[in-house]
Amino acid sequence: MGNQMDRLSHLSYAEVPTVDPNGVDSDRIGVSYIFSSDDDELQDGCAVDGAVIEPNQEEKPFDQRDEVSCAVDLICIYTLNLQTSLEVYSPENLLNKCRAGDLVEFVATGQFPHWAVYVGDFQVVHLHRAEVKNSFLTDAGRGRRCRIVNDLYKFKPLGPDMVVQNAMEQVGLKDRELSWRNSESFAAWCRFGKREFKMGGEIRIGKQPYRLKIMVSDKQSHVLEFQSLEDMITERRRNDHLGRKAVLQELSTHFSSVEEKREHQTPAPHKEQMARQSLNH
Image 1 (cartoon, rainbow, N blue to C red):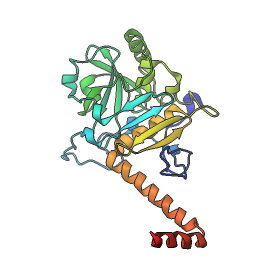
Image 2 (image 1 turned 90 degrees about the vertical axis):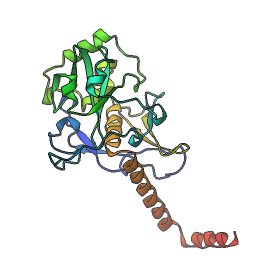
Image 3 (image 1 turned 90 degrees about the horizontal axis):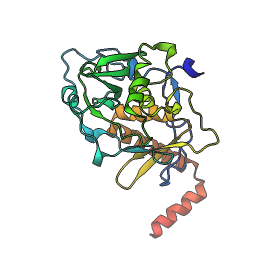
Image 4 (image 1 turned 180 degrees about the vertical axis):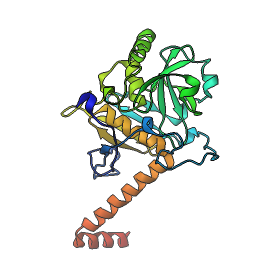
């Protein structure tokens, strides 16, 4: 597999084992992926779902309240909390805050986030449309707002010079030469140097899985399990582009179908007993 592995995307919440520590869902739900494209394959003028965007259509402003609060555990390796969500800036304003080796995330409502490595001199290196490119930061975001995301992953970073070197050495790679599924995996690999960010770099069969904890509310969460970091990243990025409201609606629909399935599977005598108990109360 390795570099020959194709891109994958979400199928459904009924395929791959997951776990909910709060006991909301006894039928463990999960995700699986089919061959498809990620944000780096989107054409200009297209929405994430492939619909055509009218030239004069106004883009929705990015709203941080629509982000999905989540954390990834082995011992927590990634955290995005709405209470401490990072401030976003225009690319022009972010230039004053960037240092060589920083990770930059471009965000917009209804779009996959796009990640890049700042390499100095107002430039970034990023994976875009199946090619690693060296671009000006103001061009790479294509009008999106952006923020520095060095601390979302909790791995120990490499030195700034090594991060820049990792990024610059990949410029020009394209298509089947690539080892990363999306811009985030590429940028994170440059900064942390971990092979787990590469396609096929890790399969944790028989090991403790990665757990993506989605915060449903202040007191309730739902946890999905993944055998590789790249699959977990793909699912989290999918949630980012859907937005909090759509993700919570998807989970609610799933929980309702599971509850309905349980009711149909409950033996008739047991149902009668439950009904009598309900009347007695």
